[in-house]
Length: 351
Ligand code: TRP
Image (cartoon, rainbow, N blue to C red):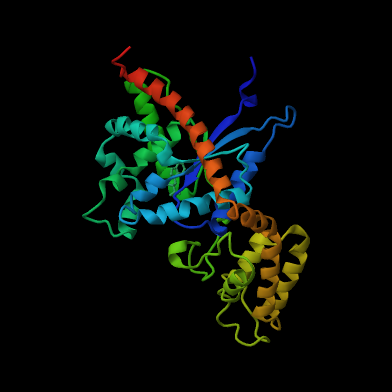
């Protein structure tokens, strides 16, 4: 028997298609997804992981019911961002949630296994209810989305779920449902998973220096930004507000330009970055010079991604074909899980 470590482990992860992906997504998750996708066993050469990447359009609708066009407009762009970032459809299966009605079916069965109070305890849902102003009038579909997210994951019997730290409560709910299902129906159909959270410094602050990068805060640099668009964002980055004259000594901490240099400068530019930091702290180095340098680094580091992005953007029909194929492939996996789920529950009336 082949040892377990030689078997591919299943990865399931995804995003709500509510806007284009930005450098925060890249640093926090996309780069890691590409790395996991490409990881090979040293002796057999076999890929270690089989990744499934979900475009969670139905989950996105739970707080966009009145503006579904937001989702349909962004879906293709998110797919193009994935492909540009290096997600390879021959290794990773990219698919659309609403193309797999069996996920919704699983959700219905799972909803009976936990109480509203248990869902309400989820701190991420609590926080979202507050920030979205849903208090007192929570859309029912929104309230139960952790259960539908559990279905996304359990449907693939995923081993690993790479997510941001805010998604850990979802992983806990998922595993609670898996345990409850297996106990209740005395089976081993569902599998508990492990959340994979990026390291602390994998969180990128916004161009305003205030918080994490996000579309809604208007402080994002998108993967698609290049040339003048990129330069304008770098030019307006928050630096040290007390660094007024070039001769003034400047601060590095909280200075977005230096934070980004830390995140993106390649190894062979590191010692130059350190020299720049010293010069800036001493005084005599102007913000524009550092910004020009950062702009050049970003253009170089993302050149490959920008090039691929332009190519895929020219051929949306090809991208849609990839999504269609991925959705068909993912659907057959979920159908197999659903069949076992129904069998365990004794739901089969016609033979
Ligand atoms: N909730 C995730 C987000 O907002 C998106 C998502 C939906 C997801 N289903 C998932 C992530 C399953 C991981 C696994 O980013």
